[in-house]
Image: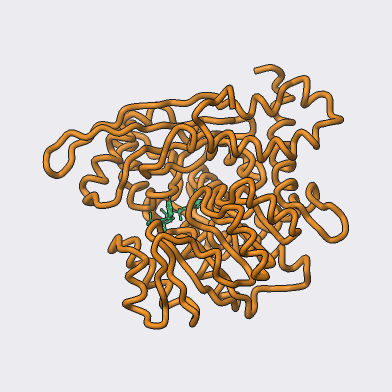
Length: 435
Ligand code: NDP
């Protein structure tokens, strides 16, 4: 805390990892003497820059942009770009730190990074968003590259924004390289990238349920968020025979006891992304559903829960409520949605609980595959990518079990993910000596 004043999210993320790593490295002298955890928790570099742009009314606006390059021990820095008013250096440092472990878990050669700006895309016209993206890339381009740092999307940055940024990168550098992932299919993007995080989280959930001889058929699911991750998680739950009861946004949550089926999910996707509408409008479209302003959905009784909105959206009391209501499994689609108290509640109750760095790694995994396709200058078929995603999520699950099995049928997935991710990065760092 003393080293990182005013950075609560970053301190929280490091604390969560340190709890498990201290235990693991206790009898491993090399990791101690080489200060490996301390080195991973100090970003390689942080670039902070001014993003100046002109709004539709001709006013000059100024935002702050960042790129946190946390660690490139096992591959080029890789991680999304977030545009949201809540973005701070602390938030991006926590995300870049988590990303380092997550990327290691995928088994692909990617280091950890994250970037973004405190820009609020809500209420902005498409032309304003384009000008912002171009200005953002006009600085960022000198710090990234296909073998250096490969950003992607995150909250507030979808295919449209990636297109604007890629266009500007190409224009400045006169190079067509795989410098960003999440691109459109026409210019080097990969099939199934938009679906990968949400689908992957549900695959991970299925792997966890399988260890108890169960599957998703007939199970009720509570999901938060209504963006990319949430809607695709909902879609896969429905495909595997489950019933989705809730979705949310920063205004509150909707509860649909009839179940949110594929047609309703399509409506939400169009409404939130293309019409840039609010989730509360769902209740006017689908009678029988209710809207709960300013609330999160964790009080709704369910078998499984998937927090897919943002960090610290599921607190200690929410976790207790879920456990009390009989929830047997939680798979995080978002990054660090559960606070430290909530994590301890799930661990104490010994329910199946997957931290985001394990369960939401499907997105970055397919991004890694997009990088490979760009390097090879080819595109893989959808069926090949679907199979690779399934295999990667199964592989991450197996790594978590390897390092997190506590005996008596209980797997501590947080511990498993932290140790498996740490070990790979740490061993590479040891090989490099003191750098
Ligand atoms: P989107 O921008 O598509 O959607 C974000 C959703 O979360 C929206 O419903 C948004 O509501 C809601 N939300 C955002 N901030 C808040 C807040 N402060 N309080 C309540 N709700 C909020 O983002 P994604 O779906 O891509 O990302 C969601 C989470 O998943 C993030 O934690 C992200 O880091 C993580 N993630 C995403 C990956 C990806 O591939 N996209 C990969 C791995 C992790 P509103 O519309 O009101 O803002």
